[in-house]
Image (cartoon, rainbow, N blue to C red; front, side):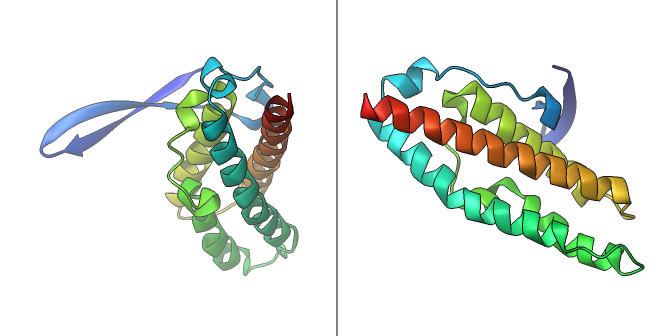
Length: 155
């Protein structure tokens, strides 16, 4: 997986951050991490947070499907791209994301999509496809992870 760096300034100190460049086709289904397998409370929180995010993802996907390809696409899409923010979709702090590589990669992919599209001044049709692919992969990953965690909790 390729890494892309960015530089942020915190209290006057420049810090280089690494951001995973994860594409929807690169997401892999992984086994549950040790941290999730050994902590039922965290599993329940992750399930609750992922289930809460699914309607937000589905709503965004529905709006993408309803986009009309015309001269007003720019304005409609500009309003939609803000909804790609990880915290807007998740409605939580995602403090558990580092406990599982699949979830971390999925949220990194979402964050990269958001960062890429938020800074664009002109939208293209490919941007709509990119956004659709990311939200679809995110939804599939969340549904898969919920099933894995629920199976773990019932054993």
